[in-house]
Image 1 (tube, rainbow, N blue to C red):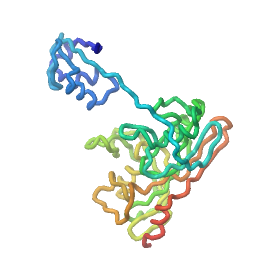
Image 2: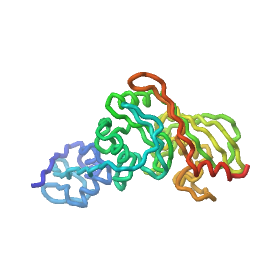
Image 3: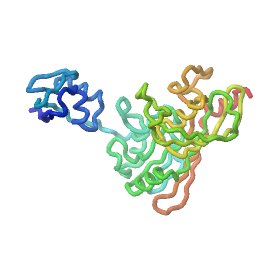
Length: 305
């Protein structure tokens, strides 16, 4: 028999919309998840299903049912890995284009996690749960390059702390639209959810501190080849920051609005090239370099100066 939770509306909550009230009653659930509860008639007031727009009254007894979350089985898959460094504590791999780092809705196979589970067996940290074993940071599906995997919880905690204190070296290579005149520049602009599109990030006043250092490697007629050094690591930070200064990444279908690439690309030209960190056990500094993918090298050869 289905189990329902109950909540009694207080005087202070009298007149509130029920969907708004539930966002405070049911913590850690998205608005779309709660709307689905109404559609499935899992929200009742005095035993009767109600709409999300229902205005509650003081003393109303709300009953709601939260369906049990069923996690899919994440299985090891024999997917080749380009290993840059490995020991008994950490693994650094060069992730290819069009590969998701960890399972998520719509991507429960073919991910880096599936490949790493096959390679490492049970030797992966479990801090981030069954969907993200060993994962302490990630890069976007269409971004190539270095990702560090932690094989035990001790390594995970150490790398996570280094990420938090911004001591991990992360240098990316990118091709951006337009000519950047300065040889070096620093973008210091907070990054948060785009208030106009929750699926995107943006420079926002209430965002988290974000700093990107940009160094020009080569100027072309219509593009600039740059190295971006991350001081912080916010979601889509480089993509957002470069678009913010009007030099979005070549091929970036999300942030290069109004720009059309003449090249046949799969997403943004962004490569996580250099990754440097202190080993979680020995304390020794380790730095890996992921070679540029072939499509990236080809672009640098054919773009007119």
